[in-house]
Length: 406
Image (cartoon, rainbow, N blue to C red; front, side):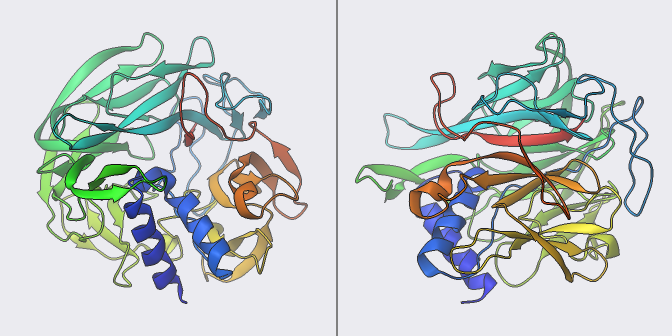
């Protein structure tokens, strides 16, 4: 079975169980890999590789300095809490920090339809702890860990909020021309890309009823996306331009855009058809895949290393061995494999944050008992950053991280 077939099967399996495509897809692919004893793909949401302006010298693709951040999290190289899951206190390593995390639940309405809803834990710059937030449908943190872009509960919405994370108050609303249901910051935090939809991509329909895996019948997602374009927003001025995009796939209702590593293009992963990415310039014109990102897989969150030399890859294990690849960014050739399940974010050019399962318990259900790890390339030194992932009274369900440059 080739990679495309594995991904298609995993996507369909995920859809059948009415779980959030961006968050839970990696677990489903891991399960598929175990059952088929083949090589799989650890799929996760496309993450923005952000850089901090101001106190931090901006790392650049292809080279540049990486001075230890001295903002919200201070100068400590590694801040770990291996006894916390979900985390209560800030987690950080090198240039990156856990800015927020989310849990998901399906809410069913009286008419039989439903909706996927998120609960967030987001960093408080003052206390250095994660504050629980339920009032927003969408939240993403800007580089520097002081501001978040938020969307209101009912969407698509005609405005984007800029939330001051210290006060937990919206300091400004930015109006947009088309209804937005997903938003991401550019690498330098100066722009936002809002993905626009004609209808709510997280709505669940009773006409698509499915078994949730336990025998309970639940409403299911819509497989036809209503995505109609994207808006590029200047954060400082609030000016936005909307660009129509109708090239959608009929497999997942949510197909969000994010910025390329340089912030000069936007892109969205393509799940089928053999096309790796959809790239557009900021004027809405189709663009070629940048040479620096030719070997970046949209479903691997970590992406390029800060110096642009390495790229996070997918599974490299055989049989019962859990491992993921690190490849040469210029050639795509294999460099080494790391003892992990998914590569989430680069701490620097030689260390990467990853999900890893309990040692000696990576078979069957033990495969899903995982924690955040900091892994050093070459030596494979492992530092636990969080406890093993589990639910809590405040955050029911598994939690999913969002890393941002600190």
